[in-house]
Image 1 (cartoon, rainbow, N blue to C red):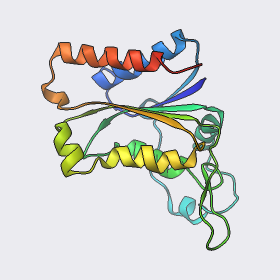
Image 2 (image 1 turned 90 degrees about the vertical axis):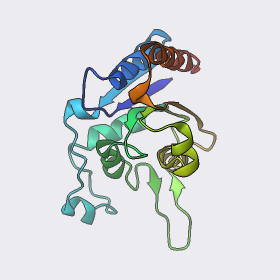
Image 3 (image 1 turned 60 degrees about the horizontal axis):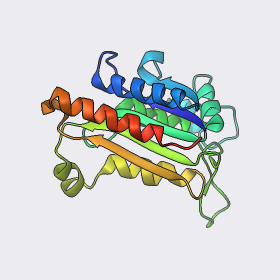
Length: 198
C-alpha cells in the first residue's frame, strides 16, 4: 500500500518523533511504499492568506507550496497522522495544513445548489492516527467529546473512499507516563502498522 505519513511536532528529539520514526520504519520493513511529510521540518506555512481564501473555490492552480502536498494526497492509498493532541485537537500547523491542502476539487467536490458535497479523495482507503495526550482518557472523551478524533475520523474520512478503514492510537497522560509505558506504546504502534495489508 502507498502510505503517506503526516507528522506535526516541532521538537525533533520528542517522543512523538520517535513514534513517527517507528511507524515509518515498520511500514517500510513490511514492504509498503512510504512518503513522509514532516510539517515542521519543511517549514510548512499553515496560514491561509486573504488572496488564497478569495480563490479557494476557483479552478485556479493551488499555491506553489501546497501543490506537492496535493500530489502526495493523490498518490496515497493510506494516510497516517502522527501528532500530539494539544488543547483537545490537532496542533495549529496540522490544522492549517488541512485548511490549505484539503481543498475543493482535491478532496471534495461542491456540486450544484441543494446537492450534497461528494468525496474526491477516493484513492484513500485507510486513515490512521497515532497521538499523545496530556489529559486522561475520560476527560478528553467523556467531558470534551473527543474533538480531534471527530475531525479526522469523521470529517476527513468523509472525503475518502466509501469503505475507508481507520484506526486510532492514543497514549493519555503523556507527561506522567513511565519509560516502560512509552516503550509499550511504541510496541503497540509497531504492531498496528505491521498489520496494515499490502
